[in-house]
Image (cartoon, rainbow, N blue to C red):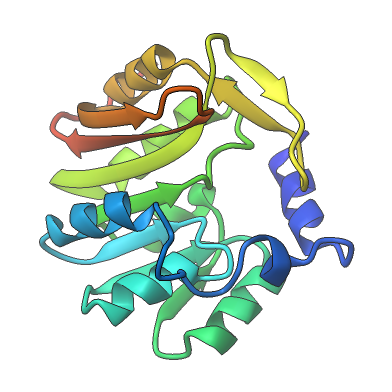
Length: 202
């Protein structure tokens, strides 16, 4: 499935973004225990890459962080702008970031890379490294598994990755993993990394 196919799936009228994703972060959302402490360590502007409905972009702005969103699906970005009008949302994909001519102190990619397979993810991580300030921070979440495999998803097919392969892909892109977590018995995992070296060319 191409990236354009994924965007079209999120644009489809059969997909209800408010019901599936929500537009604000609930008080009891367990991801707050990961994202909010991470954001507090970022000294500068944060990019929420693949911001969807803007729920995390809006939450971080509410906490006083300087944050911008990036979303390729027009339907989602319209919803994000309507819900969080004081926040800057860029209409575009990770592929468009280099042409924007900006760099960010922190990049959040919360389940926004799950539709990228082994031929696409390395390029996306290279791009995120290119737009992350030196010593800046990256926080990504993904679907974890013992093997790299494509799995069903309510909107578009997704990929499960072994933590070791995600770590290797990040290192090859120029990030140093500083923390990671996968709850026992869960497919959901996250990795925090620091941009320390120039990306390794392939």
